[in-house]
Length: 95
Image 1 (tube, one colour):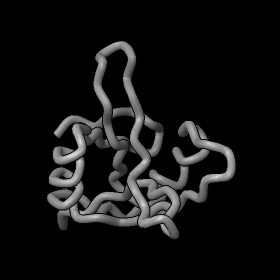
Image 2 (cartoon, one colour; image 1 turned 90 degrees about the vertical axis):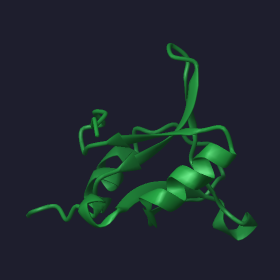
Image 3 (spheres, helix red, strand yellow; image 1 turned 135 degrees about the vertical axis):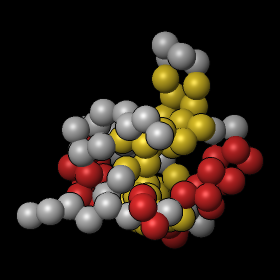
Image 4 (cartoon, helix red, strand yellow; image 1 turned 45 degrees about the horizontal axis):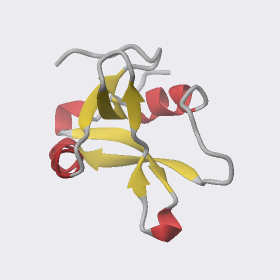
């Protein structure tokens, strides 16, 4: 089964937390580089595959959603986060 990649049309997939409370993107912190980032994925399939290996809080609802990359970059910048694009194996993708 071939994965559908939306990045060519400007879409990526992210994990959204607690949508009932207004929702926010799952953000992570890289201790080694001292950077806060939002993991984004090239395809829904990649996000679904990596979802279980991402750290999550008990009792918080999570969902994979598509977002336009420009909107994600704007929101991340406003909140002091970088955006990191990953493939289905959880490897960072260089752009």
